[in-house]
Image: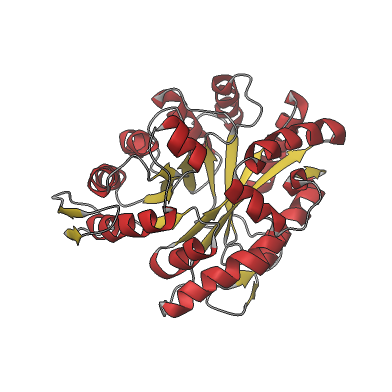
Length: 358
């Protein structure tokens, strides 16, 4: 078996000069003490217990990194498996098609218990085509696939796809009216204002859970009531505790669901002594997302003068303290992204994570 350092070296080489390419997903494990929150979503408290089944790593974009080949996806997945992670997430940008890539590679890393996307945009697709692709992937990976989806944003839909952005909530709800039964192996028979489907699939596969990239109140209530949960970006602990969870819980309670929704939150970290250099990169990344209204609106709930302060920067102990705050706020999973501004900080961040998790 190859050493962790060999996989790490290959992964960094394939990533080239991109400064932030690995996304580590840490789940707050069952061994953590729980603090029950008001509503249907239960939070967890304290530093995370490692070695649980929802500990994973992802690879992909967030500000520019794209996976240019199946080989890059494989290298990152093998790195995740070798490092002991139990889930692996592929982003969906302008590189390889994330669902197709995971369908191709699922049997190459049997030690990974969950593979998923973060996230597939719904605009430009039809529920039948997406369901056919996802159920094929689910069949290929033996029931380990989780679908992360989102509407995207107006700049992406109008500018890149040449489509008309309008009524994103209606579009998402109607899309799910057709997609969910198809992913569960049932016929779809829905007529909507924007999305309709009358179809069924003959693909043998387990049902596929769905996480929705949700930031608006209606989307969050919908995710809490209809789907397996939400995947978040640009949301700090205060935002999760005071904005995300109340809306998510409201939807969960209205649906009388028994299992609390998953709350997968993105956190960017940089283990470094060069605080100035780290903040420069953090501001560059934050400016990209602040130009998107849904993200900038979500950031306001955190009460930060500088949105780049969402990045956790400093010593590894400072990083751990920051991560624990997300668990206390009610996040069930963390997608931790190394956002390093130089090779030294990048290496420190990866090594700190590896030492902590193994």
